[in-house]
Length: 134
Image 1: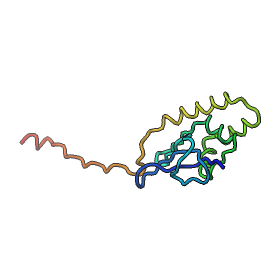
Image 2 (image 1 turned 135 degrees about the vertical axis):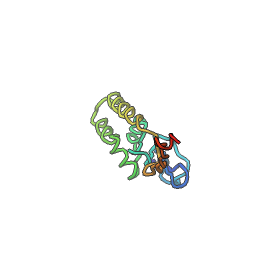
Image 3 (image 1 turned 90 degrees about the horizontal axis):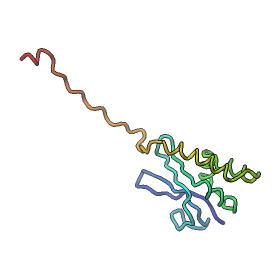
């Protein structure tokens, strides 16, 4: 059985994930058939980029998304578009809608260190009129 699931990448304590299509029996970091997207939970808001046409293709031919990917697909609207595709709506319309949503997602800042504001720099005392007169 083919699954759509997350494959962890990134360094220690800085997870980023690929959304991959792979055989259910393979290990999490094992070989995969195709990369169909990425997910970065560390940006504000979370960044989810999905190749909508490939995701719809794989789900149409029977690939089952994992629970985590299913939740991501609900957030991005991929699951709703799959249902509309099954009801007979044109794939071109659905992909145009997904492309518009992708363009909005690209405008999100790639800043990844959320919750860690730089420490404020101490203000230097400005010379006063008395110090300048001396």
